[in-house]
Each structure stands twice: as structure tokens, then as C-alpha cells.
Image 1 (tube, rainbow, N blue to C red):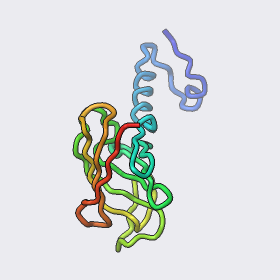
Image 2 (image 1 turned 90 degrees about the vertical axis):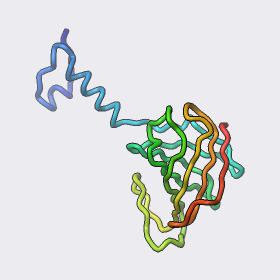
Image 3 (image 1 turned 180 degrees about the vertical axis):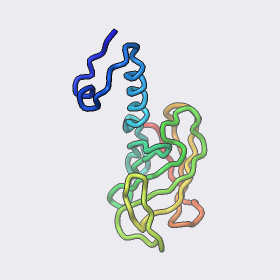
Image 4 (image 1 turned 45 degrees about the vertical axis):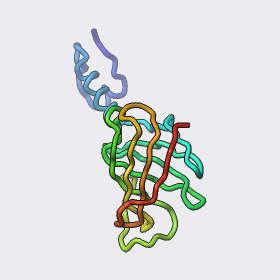
Length: 151
């Protein structure tokens, strides 16, 4: 059983594996690198919608309404995690002038001094469920509550 790799074969000058091992490994590697945005998870908040925008490694990125625009929530350990959602820590970053003494740089390259710590707690560990998040400014302990229900 042979495979025609076309341009890939010519560009990399290798011989296709008759058992398809190279193709399977290449496909598996590409699937790990190309994590799609999960924008089908949308929640209703008091001031609009929260959207699961993307995964960058083990970090999930949600966007939420913030001061007339949007802010991002960067949630550690949630990227690609659909079975053990519970309590997660992270941080939020918004556009505009901030009050923090240090700049924060997100995994997506966004940089600002308008950020803070956050915690998020999902209602159920699996699937699409509601959540409650707590926010702060800069390094303070998160206390400001935000409730989200599935849309």
C-alpha cells in the first residue's frame, strides 16, 4: 500500500513508508499542535457573553465583556481539558490603562498593565456547564464574583 505525499514528498525528499507509519505519526503530531478554538462553548453573563476562544498548550483562553470592550481570561490547566474541570487558577488581561506596577504578557503575546489574578470553579467536572469566577486587580486575592450560565 503506497501513499502519494505530493509536495511534502518532494520538499522533504523522503521515501513514503509502505506501512503508513510516517503518515500516522505526522497526522498525530499535527493534531497535537493544531488545537482548534472551542467557540461553541458560550456562556451568558450579567453583562453579555463569555466565549471559549482558544487553547494555547494547557492554557484555555476565554473572552468576557469588560469596560465597553473585551478582556481575556487565561486559565491554567484547562486547555484541552473536558473531563476534569473543577477549580482552576489563572489571570485576566484587559485593554486600556491599568494600575499594576508590572506588565503581564499572555501566551498569545498580548501585553498590558491592566490585569489581575482569577479563580474559576466549574459546576460539574465534565462537559458544558456553568461556572463562577473570582477576580482581582494585579496581585490581590480574587474576591469579585462573576457567574456564568450555559447559553
